[in-house]
Image (tube, rainbow, N blue to C red; front, top):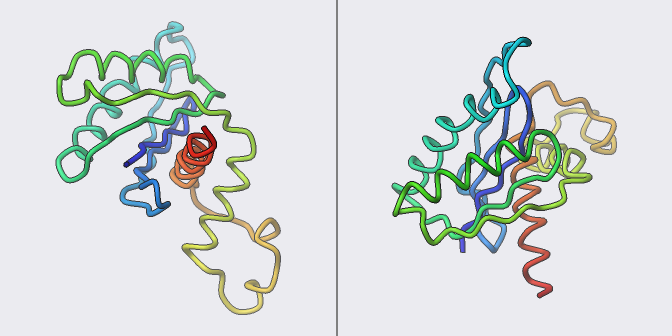
Length: 156
């Protein structure tokens, strides 16, 4: 089972495909520019196409069995966009959409980042919470959301 995790945001979002065993198959961060004078639906309009492109790109080489969407920033727009993508495209028709509590996923994302990109020299002895990250970790937050979904679904 492959889960597409999505970490929603107002100016960028992270996406990651994770197996139910925890292996990361795909991850990316997409940025977009929102106009301050834009209407309420501006985030929806800016995320629909990138989300569709990511889902299409992934579906070429891997199956998507479920989507785990974070429940915080702008998640309503993301929920509407993903629902519309699933409804409009037959190849995504069997995907289940799940909203997941994304609290503490930023901390988990930093830990995942440091696990996959180990710090060097003396910095490696510090706790990962004290080591700065100089790049976007939204893709790792999406991994954390997918892993949280897997943990919740295994309990059922």
